[in-house]
Image (spheres, one colour):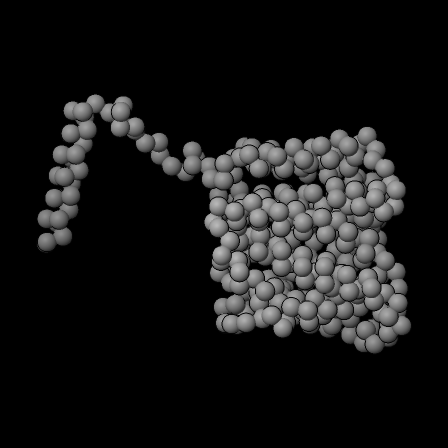
Length: 325
């Protein structure tokens, strides 16, 4: 189905999918908080990913060795992201978690600058604005530092995952790739939980609605949307649009809980949105940094152009003579 989407629409659709993913992610901290109130983090984690894996398994087709290998790698990274986030949420508030997890944008940008390609000044500025906006919206002091470190590890793991997913996702159909990841995380989660799963049967039944939401919507659908989107948008764009997560979280809190925006929240949200806009209007490829300026035909004198053609011809002839010997 994906291959029938016109090439000109794919980038826009990728942006939409990432924004929807960020919207769903904004609801996750509250859902996890509710689940771990009666379940251990490991038990919640194992059940959540098992549900997500079971939902997608019937749609898996055409497995290959390369697909399984890439899915295993992504699955291990995914386990690191969600396990550290789940542990961190035991000792840190949701707003603080959103702020620290927003550091994944900074990590992605640093990785791109160091290992992959040069980013424009506008791209770096957009990251700084969005990151600062998250801080203005969400920063609260007085929380235990251990939760901060767990969420910092989650943000770092997520940045690595975003970059690796950008490399792997264009080469595989999304549903099998996501399903393998979910089964990897589910198995690791079951090993982590151990016998704790059987000891919480009653609590599982009580929290079944939240667990189904976490497994189907906040796991299977979220990761599937991200995998499809990153076939069409860059890792930098994906990380930056995830900056909308705390903004959506604040909106959900206002609609469901009646919490209002403070002046600080309005300022932070505006900074995040400016960062998003800067990314939307920047060129997809910064050709000025990678290509040598070409002389326009109208600016080259006829005589110089003729001499250039003669010189090219002489060089080509010389190369052919050398190849003969």
